[in-house]
Image 1 (spheres, rainbow, N blue to C red):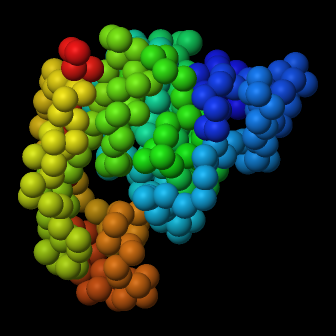
Image 2 (image 1 turned 135 degrees about the vertical axis):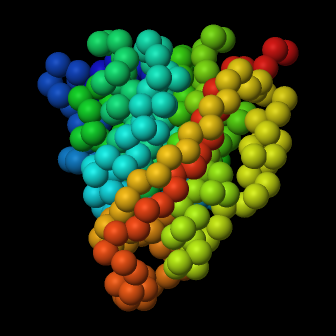
Length: 282
């Protein structure tokens, strides 16, 4: 794990700072000054879950693999670039719901050379992928609805890309001049596949619910609609469906059978909104 990223973390039990047990020896454990110890998995991530269970069901190994395969194809590169542009030269980055780490890696590559990132995800499968996404990123298993195991006021930019948002905790970890960058789908996102395959639809009130969630703690300073078309093969359609919420409702064999009845290539709409938020004045 990256030492500068580890320095941003906090013990999920007592809130104390965490540090590597023996940084010079490449120790495979983090500890706090009250004696709580957390082993770093051989895949490079650490679990900082503060208890058992939570509100979020983590993505499965299959969902994470599908996401990695799809994002590697470049269809969402404009979204990654937009997120990186919103972060700019901010140095300490937190990605809540980091998934495969693609967005965090793009931010770190595009930013200042000493930028560091922490990626949180409740899924161990995602944390394994994110841990190797970038040398300046550290992956942490955590349930953000319980708490964010990060020190207060140390994050310059927090990312929420198609993921849940704990507004109270995000406001706590952000530095006074920090920003929250949120990427959310519109009702037009992948609408062709929604219609063709009977997928889960985006809630038409999603924008209002986002405002309600962040209201009182954040103020929007920028809103950027992003819409474009891209052409997907059948295999890519399987991957994009398998990486999202519809994967929990359509058995893989059923999905494959439906997609095989489609044309060899399908033009689809990518439609999202990027919002940049600052902490609200108290």
